[in-house]
Image (tube, rainbow over all chains, first blue to last red; front, side):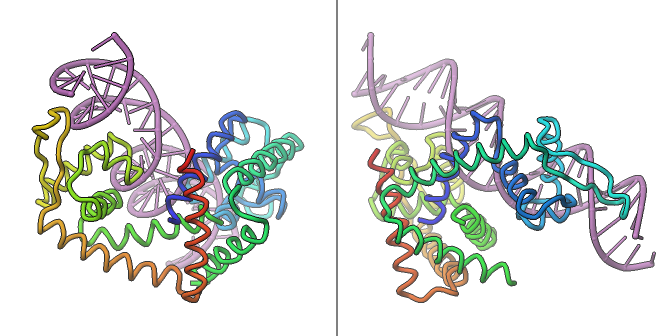
Length: 132
Length: 132
DNA sequence: CGTATATCAGGTGCACTGAGATTT
DNA sequence: CAAATCTCAGTGGACCTGATATAC
């Protein structure tokens, strides 16, 4: 049930994102950058659960679109400091609205209380495994 | 939350399945064959939500392992009738046990009532979209 | 020295598309 | 004829591993 529902969700999200030329990883990056501020690629990967290799590719594409900037960290020259641009914030807003619409579609048969309950249960499961 | 939890679940299941040389599609095929009896590949695909192309590959592999038989349907020569073998039933039992263990691990932080509630919510969402 | 970071090359499983051949 | 079935070839995104170079 879980994986089938998730497959459904992924397809809906992907379909919605194509119009904006974005993919799932892009959204995760932008959201993390806005929530936590500029960050190194390694910490971005840790926060979003995206592999370090894929962070490189996602940031490449976001940089190409002008949604983020990548600069060397003067304090630690191993690091790149990734910063979200105003254009990136705009893109994030568009994707946020898109995601909200997709969620409304996906969870249409559930009441607000039931959606909350579902979120609570999934959060518990995730937190439990994140702690290990 | 949904896709992250499902990713976690998929990884656990995959890890468990490697030992048996099986993959997710194999389990879905075997389970559907036991539940509904011999079936054509097209109906198998519809029942399990697996694409027709991937059904071909999965049945190829299951046939190689001796877990299913594939015969031409005399009543409709377009169809192959796929039948589960005793070895296939044995494999299904092993995978069932494995899945039960994985589920216990994945949903460890939830009580039996909560697991039921989670299943009920997901089932509602899936049924709603299957009907369209 | 070991550890961390960024990058690149590649592998695998999953979901899917398009096309062809055959049969109904 | 249209529609269904099986098969093959190939695409694309998600997830992951291993190796390398550089900096701490």
